[in-house]
Length: 391
Image (tube, rainbow, N blue to C red):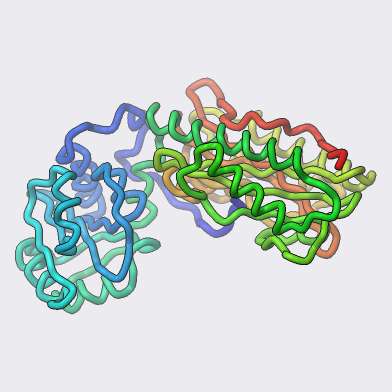
């Protein structure tokens, strides 16, 4: 998925290459990492809400809806949870032995929040600023007006930056099925089809190949649409000979995402199209060439962007190189100049340089890359050489 946003940050002191050991099997041991983070941040507790970090911690998936759901892990002492009453049966499967404060729709959640805060007796709380919804924040403050709330999204999410072997296996399954679906889709592309028809076929084939969900809404864009980094498939744009066709998509399998982009040409490629494609491919390969444990996010992006800047198409640069990939399609680390984060073995990132000429066409090539102690492993295996479809 196209990289956007995500500033630089430094890793928490407890984040090291040792993090690729298997995640502890007991829930208290898994929660201990969040207790340690609370101590590092100098707050009394860390709060998680349903989402990737919550799922990683409890190994069960709970959705976000109109009902607040909260897991609070103090720096010391047992964790506590605020759980909608109708979820108590599912929550029992988690094996949580801390205090649970439940509430029913007809009663409202205010009293449960007040009971939770009295039980915890804390004055400061670190939260996931990009995941926690405003009404949950307000409910915490209503229950305890003097509560200090810190946005620690980056450091909370950084705990899952280094992937376990089980994580990698799940991600590889998502990538493999995505590549099978992409191959079948490209085999079926015909001149005169609309972008939306191609997108609909891709989505159907992803589920046929075993996807549990989409990682994000696909980007299927041809001709001038491919130059728009966040293009939407058009129902009225029929592809024609000479078009660049950019497909950026991903699937979820076992809770993990794939994120792949390939750009092909239909019928024939112009000299300009070939030159731009070659530039993007060389940038992609330059990023891989510097990838290894111990490199910084800045170093990878600098290697990639330098190739694009040295080309005749430098004015078409619009994005950074990539982002981390895992339970979220966008997560730490963010591969961009100015980010000094040292990347340990077990990190997975997207290497997705692109060049975009608004009103003309764009090219993006995206791989999912695992950093290893002595280099890297490209988890994506779909061909990257310039492809012209005979359609």
